[in-house]
Length: 261
Image (cartoon, rainbow, N blue to C red; front, top):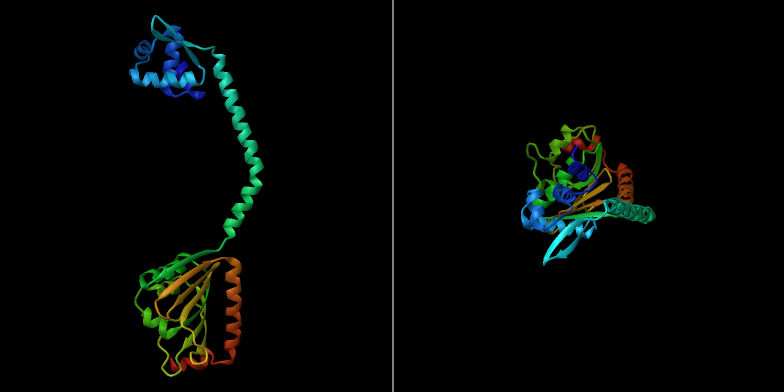
């Protein structure tokens, strides 16, 4: 390996190494002479010389109204690298001292509640896509079947069909209009379904729990939705779902009510 390449290995750029070796071989030279010897243009050579001067690898002197450049002791390269190493060691020590504070902040940030808002049918549809993309094994949901189908009619390959294909287990609390025939709705993989009448339980939304997320779609007024991603909050909402699930036992079971579907 040539000297210039070895200088590159210890941190000089390719052009810095060429100029340094050229000056080392001549002992003393002007910028123009170094440009010719290192095969660089004059402007670039001046930039390289400034860089080498800044690190004290070379020095300059004036003779007969001309500026000449000379090699400083090669030991200066080692001194420079040792100084750089000391700076890095100091930064490492500082980083070690900061680790505890940084890790605590990162933990706080990670646990911070993530909330995403959606408005309008096109944006709310992104909530349905997030449910599929999250690939949950289980989904718990409570929804008003009449309002759900009014806003999102059944169609081939919609999010409900994808849930069926993925064989995601479902527990559903269906709010229905007792004055009307309950609409047809897909039956999901290993689904458990309970029904509650809307006249006793007015519920104008669709709420689903999956992974550590809660998705809520409001059908009242303007169509809007929200995804909450926070384990403690979602666990609290799931607890309320469990209460609703157990409380629905006193109302019609799926076996009793399916005759009307």
